[in-house]
Image (cartoon, rainbow, N blue to C red):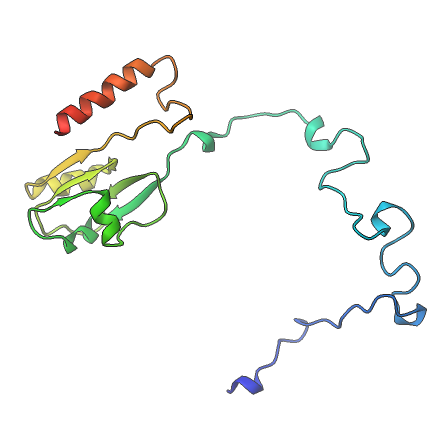
Length: 179
């Protein structure tokens, strides 16, 4: 097989729709644009869902349910087996993981998962740990330090506005404990 022998599969290509070439082209008179009106003119496109000034269907229907997507936090994932690239006894944090290009995904924080086997004693800093990852790190004499995520600037407090003072105290306690 060579590049010049390759062909598209039957039905994958269509002949070009030749518009404005008279009645015998099969696309004569209105050139597949229908009758008169806004959509027959050049540049005459309507917004999706526009119903000619009538209230759109999506607006008329009631909103129901709850979507949690706005309130979730995405984490970049690191499996515990990937931590074996670091030297024994070293301190591993998000900065070191990014330098070695180990982080999977574009998350706000870092989550360590327990997939694989750890062979070195490490002090690991992350925003979250799975139960199995924490167990495997501590089994070898390592440490798991949790980094508290600060609330997004101008964003919603993840602990709720009523508990903002409590959340701030909790974050300060965690940083004091870590250092």
